[in-house]
Each structure stands twice: as structure tokens, then as C-alpha cells.
Image (tube, rainbow, N blue to C red; front, side, top):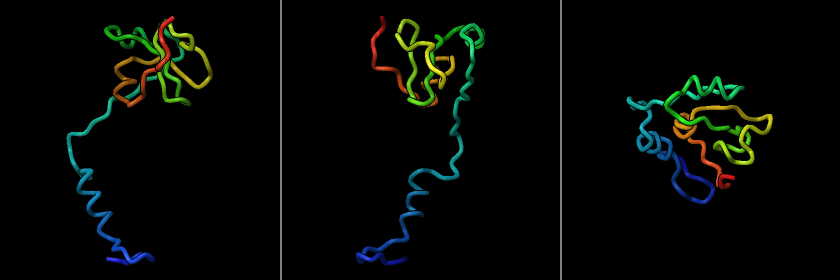
Length: 96
């Protein structure tokens, strides 16, 4: 237990955060994100899912029909479920 310059007790924070966030807990898994350069490759990889364009720099994915779908150098085609499970968010721009 340490005291900070302002007189607050510091030291139990690391231990309590480890308990709260479940360090060492089992059963947590992440869906692997498989990026593809070409849309056909992604379509073959996920036949039952939609293909989206994932912009890695912005952390957003675009659906087919949106203006930025397939645009840019910092992105790849991926399955929509994989993008969602990897915590990327959908673009707020509407379909065109």
C-alpha cells in the first residue's frame, strides 16, 4: 500500500482490476479476422455471410453499395461477422 502525493492510498488498484477483468479466466475467445485483397476471395471464404470492406485506419467497415466500399489503401475485404466480432463498427453513412 502506497500513498500518492495527494494522500490517497494507491496499491490495491492493480489487484482489484485483475479480479474485476478476470485475468486468468477461461472461455474467452476471439474470432480471427481473415483479410482478403479481392472481393471474390472473401466471398469464397464466407459463403453464408456478407462481404464488407474494412478500413483498418478508421476502424469502420462499409457494406456493398456504400461510396467507400473497396476504396483506399488501408483496408481489406472481410466477412461481416468477423468484422463485428473483432469490434469494428459499421459505417454510419447510408447505402447509395
